[in-house]
Image (tube, rainbow, N blue to C red; front, side):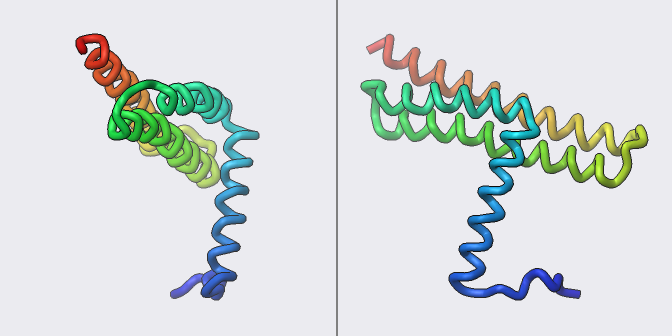
Length: 126
């Protein structure tokens, strides 16, 4: 059965999708401390990557690694909200879902560190 909220098409659908996405970013920023911290970090790291005298591919990798953290944090926050909406009761499956989402964020943060270290260390060797 189709959702009754899926009736919009064309430009109206695109505009609504943009509005919902911006609402999601505002909500994450307002309610998720980790997202705020990672967003602040991205405001420092992305301009730094763009200003470094490195190849465009290296810049892209550095920027993408930082944006991936924000994307994964948003997904993790969505998982946590959905689990909490279902039940605030402690349950092993709820813990598993939240822990796996948290692990994804951790791996994305480790990815940033590794990508940046690899690129920056390759510049030192030159």
